[in-house]
Image (cartoon, rainbow, N blue to C red; front, side, top):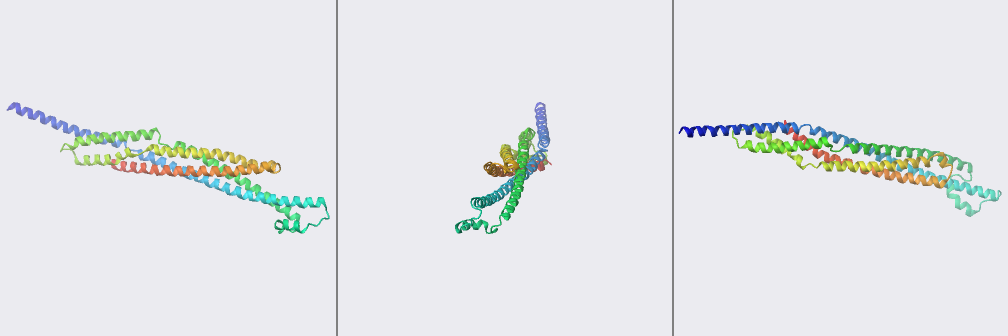
Length: 312
């Protein structure tokens, strides 16, 4: 009888000790989860802020590139008008050299009537308008160069920001530690759940953390990084294209080129306009990638927010 009683006391003590151990283990795992899952939200929100800044930067680059395209097209129209008027002056000069007393025939008059209708035979007015158009073309060329330079600078900044705005080792390690703690907490909660003496509030707190923070298992940080890399490469491409376009525009608009070989000037202007299109497209693609990265970050940010609310 005494032996039976002692055995009962012994096994009862073991059960009580085991229950206390389960409760202690749950509390330890709760503390570990609260410690390892805290602060992640700030890291993710910092990434979101940088992605937003980069979206604005590349968006400005796209606007600058679009302005360069428009300016280049207006400049091309001015240059064509200059060329047409210069051809008219050459024709008039040729007629005067061939026969100073020659009166233009009806056919010649009709041929140039459309272009000369605003001038009559006022060659001085034509020359004045050519000078005016040249000044306007020069100004437009300077604007195009400046806008392309702005686009290039925006793409360079965008590439730098995107390259650094990835889920670095610190964030990856923090989320991994949180996920491990949640897994340990889940095991401890199951064990403590068999003990009727376990504090129900501790079980509820554990379950809230397991449910909210367990969503990190469904987060794909690689998709965030992939979009950042896409933005980076698009911005690098835009910076290279924009840099070439800026040089071409500046070369085309230099006094030496404008007063020299017209074919060289035309080719440089064409190259600058084409590069403006390419640089603008690259900025637009980078902006799209940045927007997609923000969407992916928002999902992770929502998980981090819900997790940290459950930790309280």
